[in-house]
Amino acid sequence: MVTFLSPEWSLAKLGSAGQPGLLSEAVVAVVLLPPASTLTLEELRDFAAHSLAQYNLPSRLETVDVLPRSPAGKVLKFILRERFGAG
Image (cartoon, rainbow, N blue to C red; front, top):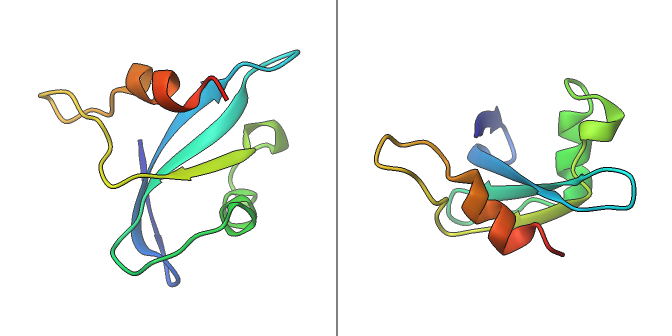
């Protein structure tokens, strides 16, 4: 999970899941946004392009009300993959 600050989104929490593709997995960004915030896939890709390689940029964006977590507080990626990976 990544937490990032941006003037437009205040504080957003991001998980990711792989979506099976022809040659590799496509990145699906799963985002928990603060109330009354919005985010488009293009805005996220533009923001992330400064720190990620092109092939790591998300090809799909999903917003959620809560990210699934373990008792230790870690995002449960297998649940994200089950929910958003087979797309």
